[in-house]
Image (cartoon, rainbow, N blue to C red; front, top):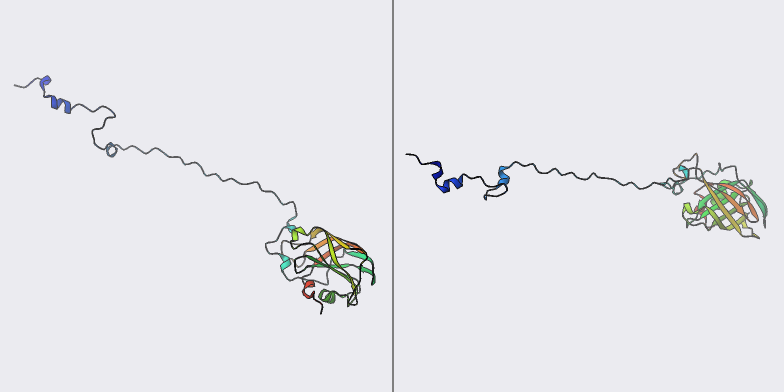
Length: 220
């Protein structure tokens, strides 16, 4: 004879009762449940770009990666035609239509103006007027090219027959413009300095770069 269902043993009935949601029976649920991990969204990488200020100067005035003034260049036969320096000195009247520049030992600008009688090759080497009258001097301009523009005092004057003439007035030079090609080495368009000379000898000049001027600054 079978027993009624209500009389089943209590332990068996309890074993068949499901556990409430959320309760744990001690087993590892994570091993049995295939729950995908929550998606993780990383913030997009952003790049902040600073404001670029354009250089208002023409590109040929930019500071060069390789400074052309560190290169060997001098063309005595081809100075620009826009120089006219004239006046009276202790050694007589002086007129120059040719101008050259270089850098001195400390980086200051050196200027050389040649009269029609002066031989360019000779005076670039000696700068003492032995071949004809010249005007030679060094500016107190400082060594940095971008600081050259401005007005500077000049130590120097007219030389003729290897003699120096005294000036009644101190000389000043105003450098107003960089001309030619400064950002690269270009023999067809070398660096030039444009400016004015004030004093007993005065006028405007367009000086071409010549790195040979300063090589023999010490008299022979």
